[in-house]
Length: 124
Image (cartoon, rainbow, N blue to C red; front, side):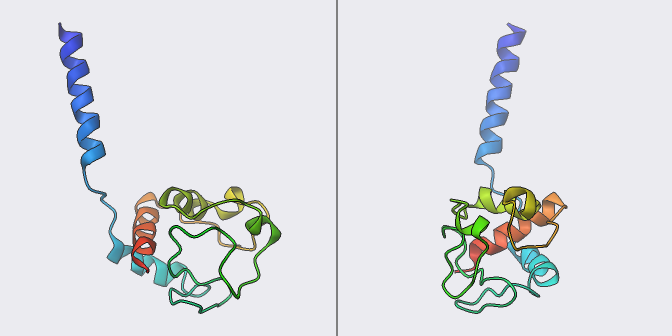
């Protein structure tokens, strides 16, 4: 009987966790972007810097922003920039796509990573 109660509590907690809103903060993510990403990336359509524009990145196929010369590794990666793919890539770009031109080591703080991805989701 106790095992059944514990199982029901676990199921309830898992359900609540899945239904709870993200704790990511897009406004904080914008600050992370400005301090760690904006030297190389713009968030306005068609604006290239050292790296491609990240305007409307969520949902875009990797290596397809017109006007930017990507590495062969990126153009052949087959990635589509979902929130999950951005988390993986931004945590360790060279591990996620060996041969990428991006030299940035990655966002190591999980909260900042969540925040910057939340911010990129708003850039449309």
